[in-house]
Structures are given as C-alpha cells and as structure tokens.
Amino acid sequence: MMKITMRWFGENDTVSLQNIAQVPVVRGIVGTIEGRDADVVWTQDDFEKLKQQVEAYPLSLDVIESIPISEEIKKGTEKRDALIEIFCESVRNMGKAGIPVLCYNFMPVFDWMRTDIKFTLADGSFVTSYNHTDMLNYDLSKGLEARVAWIRGYTGDEIQTIMDEYRQIDEERLFENLAYFLRRVVPVAEESGVRLALHPDDPPWSIFGLPRIVRDADSIQRILDVVDSPYNGLTFCTGSLGTDPDNNLPAMIRQFAGRIHFAHVRNVELTGDKSFVEIAHSDAKGNVDIPQVLQALQDIHYTGPLRPDHGRMIWGETGRIGYGLYDRALAIMYLYGVWQGLATATHST
Image 1 (tube, rainbow, N blue to C red):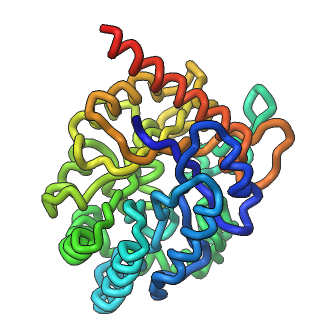
Image 2: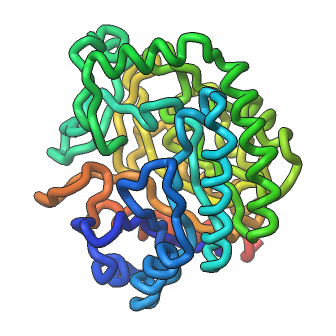
C-alpha cells in the first residue's frame, strides 16, 4: 500500500493539521517552510520544529517540498558552488531530522505556470488553467503578478533582466548545469538517507522561451542516468506529464520503477494544443487515466508517499487555489477506493 499524504503549507495555511488528520486514510504530511531564499540553510531545528507540529497529530512528516534551488545554480554561474553547498547542508539537516524524501524542481525562474488561477468550471468550482495562445501573446513588459506558483511578482524591467541573463542558456546548457548539481548533491543525499525526487516541468514545454528539460520519458531517463543511484529519483506528477498527450503515463511508471519516490496524482482536461484545465480527479473527460496510473504503481510495488495534487475549490471554500480541503479530501477517498479495488481484484485472481 502506498502512503496517502496531503500537502500542508504551515501555520498560515487555511487548512489546518487538525483538518487534515480528520480525513480518513491520510497518514502523512508533505511539508515546507515558505519564504526561504535559496541562499539560506534550513537547519535541523527548522525541520525538527516542523516535524513536532505534524507529529502532534496521528501523522508523520514524509516529504519536504521544496528546498529552493538558486537561479545561479540553474545558470551555472561562478556563485553556484557555494549555493550548492548551502543546499547540501539543508539536505544533511533534513536527514538528521529523519525526513526521507525531498521533492525539488529545476524549472528556470517561474516554477509552475498558469494563465488563469481562478478558472470557473461548469459546476461552478474554481481551478487553475493554462492557455498557450494567451501565454504567447502576453506582453512581458507589463510584468507578471504574483501567482499561485510563486510568492512574488515581477516588474517588466525585472523580467527583461531575467531574459537577458538566460539568453545563453539553452536546453543542453541547462541539462549540463543540472548534471553538475546532481553529481555534487546525490552523494550527500545518500549519506544523509534522503531520497531526491525531481518534479517534472509544469507544463512540460518552454515558457517565455526559457528552457525546460524534465518533460518526457527520454529527458527524465537521461537525468536519472547522470548519477545511477536510487537517491537520484523522481516525483511522478500525472498532472504535469499528463498535459502532453504523447506521454504514456503507465509505461513511464514501469520504466522508472525503483526511482519514483513520490507521486502527485492530478487530472487535466486538454482544451487545445498545449492548453489544459485542471478538473476533478474522478472526471472521465481527463487526459489522465487514474486507474491505469494506480495499476502501474501497484505493478512496480510502489509503497512511497502519494498525494492528491491540486483540487477544485468547491462549496464556497476560499484560500490558495488548488489547495483547499474539501476537494482534496474527496480526491483522497477516490484514489484510496480505486487503489483498494485494484488490489482486491489482483488478489482475487
């Protein structure tokens, strides 16, 4: 049985640990410390405090998502060695606190991207969505508002500076910089007992001309091959990878058996070329066949943490779009029911 978890953003989260503990079958928390810059070490005390908050309930702290990676590391500047050491020290401290999985990403600048963070579905619920035409037509000189994917916004001048800095960074150069990072961090993760779980790019294609390199089976396999260690692993996100209709999610799960340390399960409906809207996990219109995804995870004997990734904002709930309590709780029970049904069917045959 995989371990069902839920993301919790800390004391300022509108969803409390008590709320989460009341959802049947949830046994773990995916935690974070928000607002930390990439040049700050996360101390053992930081992790221990977070762990104590979680363990005050019948829950365990199973994943940290995410310790940020500096743009200097992604760009491969002369500052990267010192910043990689800061990241390594945080990993060491995480290991001392006994937290086993670290989800991180290597997306330049903007992290995960949406063009609408309050898209209204036919049932009246709110979700995030992405329209590639809107993205292509967006005037960056206007800047970008703070969005659900990052804490701060960017002025037009700041974005121009960013684009200038990344002008010489193509996909191959970004891959080389990730490989440099992994060759230094994976041995530290092994010594610390922390499994690294790289999150795919979301969405898995270029944004504003910036390179993205964690997109499909071939690009992920290349990254895993950089350091052939079980500690150089993957967060398998069905929502990110599922926005590309060419990605065969069950086949990818089987290909990466032994290297998947965390699973995000989310459903998306494709609305056009490189365009999608997030929908209920159980919605048959989705491009993600969740029963087949869960069957593949069972086939590889996956027992790690799994969380519902994003949900609708339903029943008048307010707060961080995608991270309300109600629909994620419904999703958890759906995922648990499908998992149990598949397991029962397998055992009966």
